Length: 233
Ligand code: UDP
Ligand code: MN
Image 1 (tube, protein in one colour):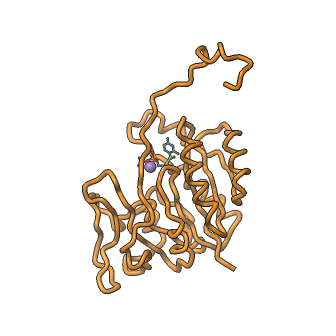
Image 2 (image 1 turned 30 degrees about the vertical axis):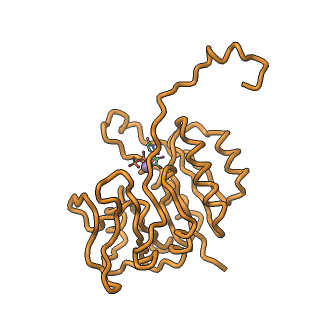
């Protein structure tokens, strides 16, 4: 029996939401033994999304996980943080085994990535393609199977210079207090960079890209639609 991979996906209401999740869902439909936690940054359940998740047949739970209102005035918002924490809280209550992976709704995932992370013991890592920055990727630097450091444009005093899409951890080692970003989360696991299990052929293969969808500026125009009453529109 394959260990279950718990995929926690933060998402939020916007015109791109269903398209992004369609892409991700149809990747996950090709992966065995997945449990998908779709954590939606709103207190209003999205029935279209709930119906779509049912259609996919992927074992899942849909949670409403709004960002606390205290952040509404902030310029730099903790995007996806309340969602991921709520997903981890759900796991504490419902599962004790398997592997956890944080999969943002807008990234691009090769199904081989899930094969790589399934047997994580402490922490698995692999390269993440960063199509829009000059380094082009984020990865641990590995030489002869050993950790050498990080290949990343931005240091920021972190111990783990890793993208959210670039690691998986076993559910069993989940910290009681979830960290608020990659570095905080990994530090709270009490692991060192020397514990990293290098996946994707010693971090030489790219199985995930941190992609970003161009934001639409369109607003649905209900007055325009009025003249199409009693049609399919
Ligand atoms: N997200 C969210 N609420 C927000 C903005 C983003 O839940 O107000 C989610 C989003 O769906 C994604 C993750 O948080 O899964 C990271 O956000 P985004 O992709 O916008 O960040 P970026 O990749 O640009 O750093
Ligand atoms: Mn993103």
